Image (cartoon, rainbow, N blue to C red; front, side, top):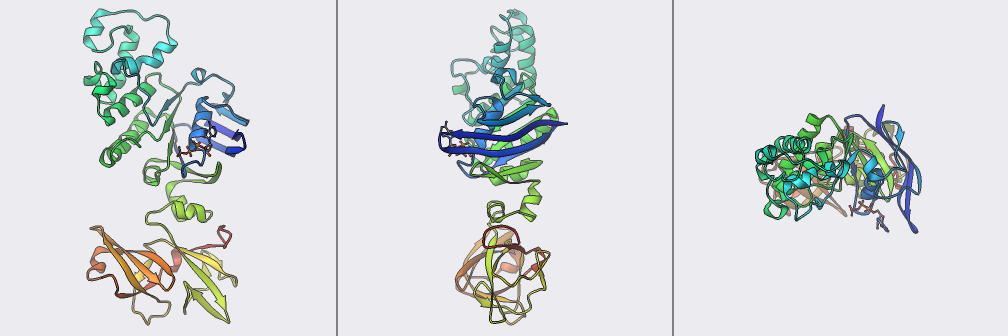
Length: 374
Ligand code: ATP
């Protein structure tokens, strides 16, 4: 049974179709990421699921129950915002307890527990225990009596997560929760969120425009563009088997290289060079007779001798040494490509030098000029 089903969802703001014909089934306990460039409709979709926006048409079902007409508080969904949205005048404990307070009748005061769990001044026993338990899980128990202004960005982010967890929702929605953290903290918090997901066993829907986050955290990625789904798949499926040029270019760093392959007067011309020794098949299809774009990831090349059959000859534009590997920017007449070279083979390579490479045709992808895979 799908934990969440979105069926032909559509949302317009005046003339703008922010989400268009969007259908997705998310499995119980799955971690699904909505990925795409700014303005592609990720946040709108998350807000539709949370009930902060209303659908123009379509359906949203949680555990097979239609929820799109319910108020946000009736959906049993928790959302973590990019800004954390903490109340500045409340303590950390009161912030975490807030979703419980919204549900509950007037809380009881239990003085003993108040002393045991600082910052829980007016909370009842049940709430205090809940707050203490999630705070312990997220390692912020020592911060419960503080106000948000007395916390670091990473600590605020944990408080926002704790507040989402306290009601034990069926579904967690996270809208770019790491974007206000510095690069180092982002990497460690990324791993913590994945770990939290595993420990809770809950369903997560995560929004980001950062492909590294999407690739490292998700069971499946939904790549969106202009309100529409481009492809749904595991991170590796999107990398190795993109449906179209948009997916191929969005996923992967450095970006995939696109080399025009033309056929003229019986010659095969790749990136403006006559090439010999092309395989009879590219991307599992017989070599077409019309012009296509050949997609080759930066690791899909081998350095070779300039005269070797199938060699492409170019001139080094830039050498970027990263330690374990080197990115070589190579000019092939009019096309610049990036080649990932193991550090040991890249020693001595310098800008301005000639360099010959041989594509690894087994991993080549073929695209029509329209952008679809051949
Ligand atoms: P970002 O990564 O920049 O947050 P996003 O992918 O989350 O972008 P959305 O915020 O969902 O994109 O916006 C999708 C489209 O809908 C955009 O063109 C945006 O301008 C438009 N849009 C979003 N909210 C509204 C609104 N309340 N009124 C009018 N247009 C809106």
